[in-house]
Each structure stands twice: as structure tokens, then as C-alpha cells.
Figure: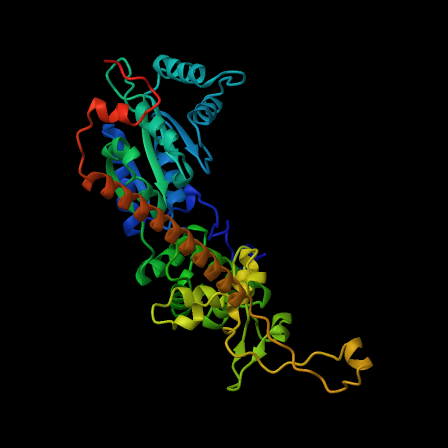
Length: 431
């Protein structure tokens, strides 16, 4: 609808990475030149590092279109290759080769045989979302770089694109050999204000707009950069939605108000007159407040976590709760949230049957149950038993030591045979 309204021959702001919508900004153009130089020389691995939405996939698409006539280019959009076997299956599928019913070694030999017999200059692997690759798969890719063709040229050349988590993974000692093969690191950055302004005008002009400055006003382009923080993907999404809003309102130009309305719709924020405005709250100053719920996998921070991580928390905060609620971690957290049990309030229990028969109508005070004291008393009794046992053992050892001392200190007298015979008077004595 907005193409006809603004006389455009195609959508100017594509939300998917297409080589036809490539705008040569400073950082992405420098990365393009560096990656092409490394691929032509065949000297090692090129890395493209950047956060989400800055153009990593777009750069790989541009490299694919540039080199597709010179060699076989394989683009892996979102690989989940946790093993070398899945890697070779993916590669053989891109070469239109069979890969069913083979083990890892057979797949590897079939792939290498196809590369050595190919008439092209080898294969270029462009792997996006490289942070999802397993360590064994990265090591297998490094080994592939060592296979050469007959003219002593590399069979496989490699470009990996990932976020900063992928760059941190490469510091693992297991990937030390892989990291040594990296010869170029290309970092993609967000658009500056001037680049956002020029990119919007360039996309409109490429789509057939004769006067892009009059369609997207200067203040609107500045607002787009402020709201999107210069992230190219979000810039395209916001500009496309702004064109749709302007066409629905039958406007010939896009100003700051249209951009703000499009941004509210894009972020699912309340807009004046929309159904979302009814669900918002208003604070004391009359400002609209939008409340967002927590994610399903978010765990609420309990009082136990905050107190446990505080160095200056008082000692009473860490007293053990009632032992009856220490069965699971959940009951432990629920018990520690309550203040420590020091002086319980005065509670009263209803009068029992015995009290009613004995005419005791006054409620009697309920005695607080303190399981901690019972456990402590039990522990003291055990210590007393152990102490008594140790005392008995010590007394036995002292008695043995005394007997040993007496036997060593007693003077030994020489015993004669006549003395022994004298001890047995009934035995006849020989002359």
C-alpha cells in the first residue's frame, strides 16, 4: 500500500539481509574489504564480530554474491552443528551429494574427495551465528584448512560471524590452535547520526523515490537515530512502519510525530486513542506508566538472596529457622523471609475438654515451642556421654601406666634353685 502512495518500485527498508539493500557504511565496508582480501589470499580465518542487528548476516550475503562466480560458496544461516558428522552432512547437502547411512569418517572422505576432484577454486564457508558451534566442530573446521588442491591452494576458506560471546569462547585452551589460524577480526558497529541519515535517504532513492528529503524530513531522521540507537535492523523496522502509518493517514511526508507513533506501535507502547492506553496507569504527576510482566524463566529475588549477598547484614538475619520447615529449599527461603524468632507474641489456645470439666473457663497461655532448645539440649547430652567415656578411658590408661611404672621400678632379686625347691616341700630332695 505504501509503495503506491509514495511511488516506490520496491520496499526500501528490508528487514531480512539482502545483498541488494546493502548500504556501504564505514564499519561494514571496512569489514567487507578485509574479508575479501583474506579470502583471495587464502591465508587463514576471518571473524566478523558484532552485536545483534548490526549487519553480520548482511555482510555474509554480500560476500556470497561477490564470490559466487569464482568458487563454490556455502552459506550457513543458523547452524546447530554440535558434531563433525552434522557438519559434513550439511556440506554434502549443499554439494547435492548423498549423505545418508554413513558414519563420520565416510562422510569426511566423501567430502574431501569431492573437493580434490572439483574444477573450481575450492569452497568458501560463510557461517553465521558461529557462537552456536561446538568445540569439536570448530576444531574440524580448522583441520579442513590444511587440505590443499593440486596447485597448492587451499580447498576450504572460512569466514565466521558471531557475537562477542563467540570471541570469548575462542580464548578456551582447547581452541588455542583455532585461534592461531585467525588472521582478521572485523568488528561491526552501529550507525552514527550521519550514517543513519544517509542510509534512510539512500534506501529511499534506491527504491525509486525522486525526492527522499521531502518524504523523510530531517527531524524525523534524527528521531529515528535517537530511538533506535543506530542499530541498522531496528532502523529499517521503524522506517518501514513509519511509511505504513503515513500511507494510512494519507500524508505526503513523514515528520517526528509519525516516527514517534510508529515507534510506540513497534514497541507495543500505549498510543493516544488506542486500546493500549486503557491498560496503563497514571502516577501522581499525571504521567502514564506502563507495567511489564516478568519472563517465565525469571526467578524473583528473595529476601534471603539479598541478605546473604550483603556483607554488613546483622548476625540475627542468618539465624536458623524452625527445623520443621527445613525440608526443602523453597520452605527454607520462605522461612528466612520472616524475622528471627526471639520473643514470640502472647498467643492463647482454646480451652480443652479437661479444662471445661474442671470449671477452668479462663484461657491458659500457650507455651511457645522452641525446637532449637530441644536440639541443643540433645546435643549437650551427647557431649556429656562422650565426656564420661573419655574420662573412663583416661582412668584406665592411668592405671596401666601405674602398673607399668611399678614393674619397672621394682628391684629384681636373683633366684637360686634351692629357693625354688624350698617352695615345694613335698618334693623329695636328691642328695
